[in-house]
Length: 615
Image 1 (cartoon, one colour):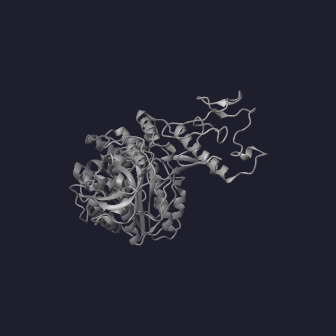
Image 2 (cartoon, one colour):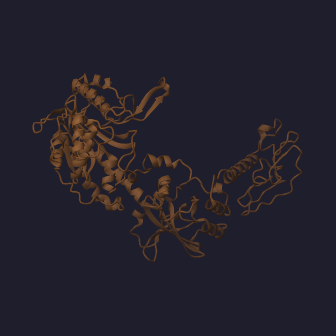
Image 3 (cartoon, rainbow, N blue to C red):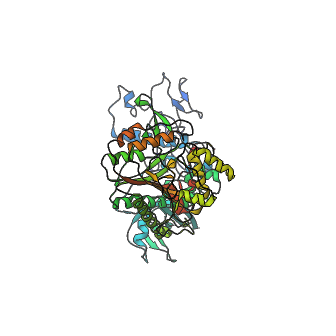
């Protein structure tokens, strides 16, 4: 009976032969890259052969070999013995590893090919990704926990611990001593691997040499050893065993990448070669956590509303459209804002609610806009505009203070905003008076039917660029962009917008200008919008009038009145205040980034699409 041992493994003849001719007659012994085969019987004429002449599949005239290994093919096979089962499982395991090594390596360039050949010289590729097994007699610590626990030691400890991480540095000091730096979760640890201090075991010298051959920057390795301090005082782990490769890196890991196309198509490489992407993620997480905690501690309930909708209301934007196959191919849209559904919850009896989520607008991609973005909206029954303004000032000022107190520890690569004073109360600029003062002209009656024509005349007189499809809202936005937003370096509220710009807010006649304006504010910082807040329109009659007015402003001539929302208002919506805040914009602000792509882990929609494209 054939005995399997560590030094002698049964493999398939010709590497991929499906069955051996006869157990004990043919064996393949793996030594480095060499196979030794005993003589095989001559193949039958109906046998299928591999390129090297080995039998891959027996013909119909030939009797199946190793019937005890495949008893289900043999009706007259004798009972399966335990040793036969062990041999069969060993064959299966070896076959799986061999196939994985040869058939599933995927496309590769010269560099990857050399790396694969290098690894295969030491052991089959299928053995380089073992399951992670934690021993009960060893402390399994993260690099962070190891550094925290043993930072103050002065000599080698008796504790036996296990850590793993990605190799960031390999230094060979001699043929019997090497140092490695491993990294995990932004923490680094030095590992000292010295041959004479490794636990004696069979083939130790060869295992140590093999590890030195294959270990390189980018590999994930596991080390079992003792905490120690080097002569220079550096905390290290003194290896007791040859480190185990958990996942080899098949590509050269550069120190830095400047190529924009590579960074766009391979964000994982960007994260491996720069600390900045990780710092941006931590900054984003802090902002989300702070905003969420602020509202929860203020008595708000966090809720979720549907991402899919039929009408996609709550803003003026082009939605993404799809079809619900299970609903008779009903056209549905991705939401452009959660606003209307949140207000439905207010009508249904909720008092203070907020939602953090994603919204989608099928529009342009530029430095400050992406079709998919994150937002936070809150609604509070009984809140007036001054209440909402005070909440906004409190939240933004507190967020700034929290971020700056943690910047050097958690995201040191990100620069703080410069020359911005977050002291509150924030400045306020009324929309119409500020424009009139800046341009030296009085705006026409913006509620009149010919308001758009009169504004176009004003644009011509002032020699201003006319926006595409110059509806009344677009003309007013263009004036604000030119005359108000540049004045908002420090946090500034733009107030009292014309009613045409705010169909979902309450409105009134401003005594100073005689214009009908909205009970609304926008927070701008450094010329960029961050918050849009107002007292919500709760009259179903006024809301219908404003919806009908907005139909005239749709650029494609489409749009529809959301009758279901109007019906909900008819049940009585209490006086309510609320706002929406772009969270990606906040990350840009506190990371000092001018492009939204720089704070999204996978970039804008253009970057996401490019990831799937071939080189």
